[in-house]
Length: 419
Image (cartoon, rainbow, N blue to C red; front, side):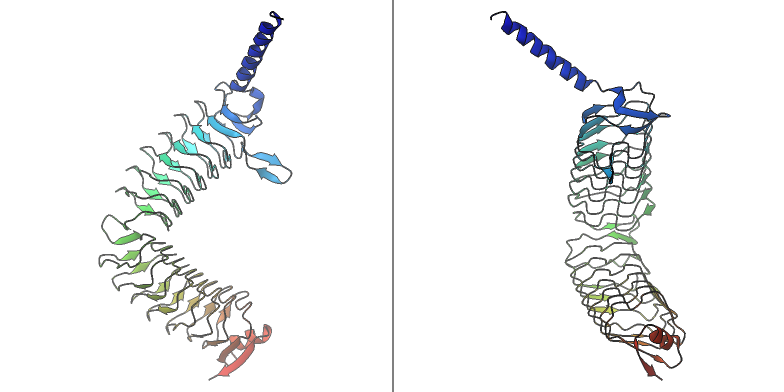
C-alpha cells in the first residue's frame, strides 16, 4: 500500500504537467493559414499565443468569429491573445466580438488595422497601438465597453468614424500632436471621458466627435472661430462673438438647454448641431443663413418655436424629424426645397404654409406628421415618395390646375382650391 500511493502521486503529477504543457503550447491545427493570412482560428480559446513560425503576416477578416448555420457568432472563449512579430495587419473585423478578450499584445511590426478590427470586444480593458500604425479606422474599437485606457502612438495621423464610439468606460485619451484627422462620432457616447486636448495640427474634424462624453469644457478651433463641442450638461450657453461656425453636432445631446439664440455673427451651421437636445423649447437662427442643415433639430421633442431668417432657401434632410411638440412654423417666402423626412414624425404639427417658390418636397417629408391643413402656393411643386403617408385627415390647399391638385387626386387626399 505504501508503494502504491507514491506511484499514484507521480502519475497524477505527470498528468497535470502534460495537461498544462498541452494547454500552454498551441496546436498548429488551431490556426488555418492561407498565403500568409490567418483565415480561421479553431482552438479552444483561453490564453492564446499565436506561434511565430507559421509564416503568418496578417490576420484575416472575421478570423476569430465562430461560424454557424445562422451566420457569424461571437467568440466567447478567448481571454487573451499574443500576436507574433512579423504580422503587419489586422483585416476588417479580424478580432471583432471576441467578447471575453481582456488583453491583446500587438507586435511592433503591426502597421495596419482594418475597419472594426476590435469592434464589440466587450471585456477588453487596455490596448497599446504599435508605433507603426498611422491610422485607426472606422469602428476599430467601437462597443469595447470595458476599455478604460488606450495608448496612441506618435505618428498617428487619423482616427476614423466611430473608432471608439460607445467605449463607455474610457476615461482618458491623449491625442498625439501628429493627428490631423478625427472622424465623425469618433468618441461618441464615451460617457466616462472627462477631458481631451485637440492637437494643433488637427485640420479635419468630423461631426459630433465628442457628443455624449463627460468633457466639461467647450472645445473650439485654435483661433476660436469654430465651436466643436458644448458639454452635454450645459443648462445655459452663450455662443461667443468670435464664433463664426457651429460645427456638426456641437450641441448634440445637450438635454438641459431650454433656449438658444444663435447670433448673427455665425455664418455656418453644420449638421446635427442641436440633435437630441430633448429639453430645447425655442431656437432662433441667425440672419443670412441660407440652409437649415440635415438633422439640425432631429429628436428635439420639446421644441415648440423655431425662428427662421428670411434668407433660408432650403430645409435639409430630417432637419426637424421627431420634433413631436412642434405645432407650426413660419417658412420664409424664399424657401425653394424641403428635403426628405424634414418634418418626419412631427405629430403635433397641425398646419403649415409652403410659399410659392417651393419647387421640391422630398421623400417622407411629412411622414407621420399630424398635419390637417397644408397650403402649397406653388403651381409646379414636385413630390417625392410617400410624402404624406400616415397623415390622416389631411387637406391640401393649392391653386387650381397645379401639380398639387393632381397629386391629391392620385393619392386620395382632400383638396381645396386657393386663389
